Image 1: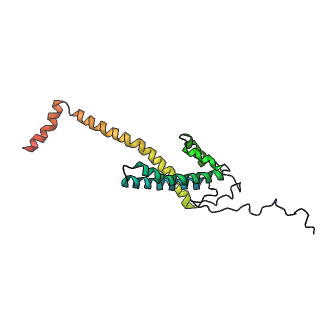
Image 2 (image 1 turned 45 degrees about the horizontal axis):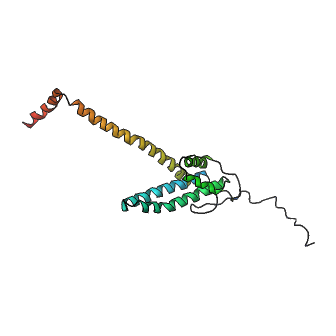
Image 3 (image 1 turned 90 degrees about the horizontal axis):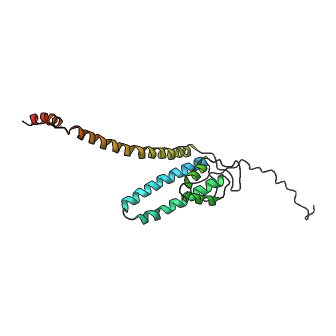
Length: 191
């Protein structure tokens, strides 16, 4: 054996092609797929709503404290977005696009509907398969969005309907004959 000869190991065959890992929500590195991305954002949306309600209840006139409290949520959303970009074999710096109005909506759609890379990429092994809890959480966020949109449409429409109904009822009793007919049974009952 010559110690100065070239190595003869075969590095073309990788035994660990089907390796996956179990990602955690607050990990800084790794990859997450679409369902996990939506589920993590659902958890973030729920936690942000609870935090906002608590801060509004406790400190109603101090918006600066609410902004400071929102910074950790923003940091976690950046981490989750970077990990989703890594699953798509994209640079994590693209996560800055979530700060640009209107662009962030289309960027989010790309992250949700874009396909991740199969197998290993330069950011590591793919995440493990999704469990039932992740799928349920991923269904919650779209349901909250749809309910919010429907409420935003229905509540003002119902308010307008009640105003018009009260106005119509008041307008129906404006003629003297109608007022007399309406008040006559009441005057008989008071005798």
